[in-house]
Amino acid sequence: MANYEVHEYDVLVVGAGGAGLRAAIEASSMGVTVGLVCKSLLGKAHTVMAEGGVAAALANVDEQDGWETHFCDTMNGGKMMNNWRMAQLHAQEAPDRVRELERWGAVFDRTKDGKILQRAFGGHKWKRLCHVGDRTGLEMIRTLQDRGVHQGITVYMECAITRLLKDGNKVSGAFGYFREDGRYVLFKAKAIVLATGGVGKSFPVTSNSWEYTGDGHALAYDAGAQLIDMEFVQFHPTGMVWPPGVRGILVTEGVRGEGGILRNSKGERFMFKYLPEATRNDYAETEEEAKIWVDAAIRGEKTQARRPPELSTRDNVARSIYLEVKAGRGSPHGGVFLDISYQDPDRVKKKLPSMYHQFKELADVDITQQPMEVGPTMHYIMGGVRVDADTAESQVPGLFAAGEVSGGMHGGNRLGGNSLSDLIVFGRRAGAGAAEYAKKHTAAPSIVDDQIKAAIDEMEAPFNRKDGKNPYELQRKMHEIMSTYVGIFREENDLKKGISLLEALKEEIKQVSISGTKTYNPGWHMCRDLRNMIICSEAIARSALSRTESRGAHSRLDYTETDPEQQKSNTAIFQDGDSMKLEKTPTPVMPEELKKLFVKKEPANA
Image (tube, rainbow, N blue to C red; front, side):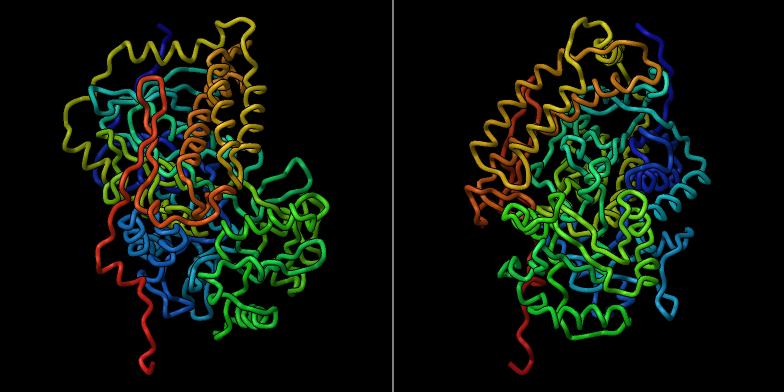
């Protein structure tokens, strides 16, 4: 058996984005030993790419805001598929977590009286997103990273976890390797927190960074946990579409939050005609009313005017752009136009500095002078590991999950800004839950050598196969399958065809091979990443086939209506031998006192 190094901790956190760092900080503060593993370098987590803001009902700009409204917005945005308890805890605790970041040194934009400034975002009733220009995620990571490093947390960078190890039914450790030179490493741990992010690299056009190969989803699945709601894949409406080398890179919703206008190739402001009937009264009916709202926002004043239709929920805006392009009204490179050039150039550069530089440097477009070309890009998966709302523990004892890798919080569609507050709310809860678990289970983790040998054999196999499959060719096949059969709009025959192709691809992936050495060998990394991506891709396709309705980010061409009966159950994916199984499980029942929040009150003089 090949050599490997060994480290032992009470709690091992896998992933060093917002959720992972916050989990590690919390667990460390509770007096347990903590190891932190990240696939990339510390500080380069995907969280830094979150731009628009962190959603929290501080009520600094709109004093009417409160956790109850944030809770209702989140549930409505998720089409009531959310785990209500997670949505409640999120809305209640987000303000404290943001103030905590401020105490730890986060530098937020400010109102005239020195409070944290908040901006509008799609699906949020009030101005709720606390922000640092359009670099909010970067500031969050900087703050959390400084806090964690000063607490003395040990960090293992450029280290990929390939397998979770178990003692009976509970986790006892994790096996992985260092990407630089292929050194194997074993982590013994009483509790493990997965904070590995999403699955975007299963799709050809995505805003996600290279790390997002569904590692945590697949690790949890292999360990016996359930993946829920995997059919709900959010396509952010605005990613760059030109030039080809930057296709999919995110254009923050903050552009629309600051008054950005969407137009088609005919110059028409098309979002007015795509507003769902249920929410139509929440948005401006005319360009004149929308302009009143934007002008008031620029001046920092309040207004009775309704918000612009561009601030509809992400699922609706993404579908609307898709339909405009399909109807032949798209921009030259297959998107639509997002325009904020009508505003004062200095204001645009101040409010959206990253967007200004991103388009100037990558597309030679000055957004203060001309519109941006944008189109839908795979951005976020609402589905993930089923966890307990209060502790973030999965069904596998000792295994916890937080952030995008966990499911339940966002239901059928995530609201912008809720991701960053999700990271710090449930990152903290996962860290606390893991620390409490480790304190209760004092026995040293037990790991059988056979598990380690199997993990090593899996990593060595691609080098031992001759004339096997090319990993990059198989990734290209996966991208083609997912974009063709499991995209923004879905249909039964396409999904069945996609599943059949994915099953065949899964067999090809077992025959993948690579040459060379383990040192700086990206093809070898891809051999392992493919296994994670095929698990997530199949889970998405099977879950999408099982949901015979359109709801949130899941749109069926053959079932265009929302079925109230299907709100009562989540899709749950789990491993059964060598097969992937799916079952419907009841959604948690909301208590009556929270249901009352959704009942519209009649005016007192009615």
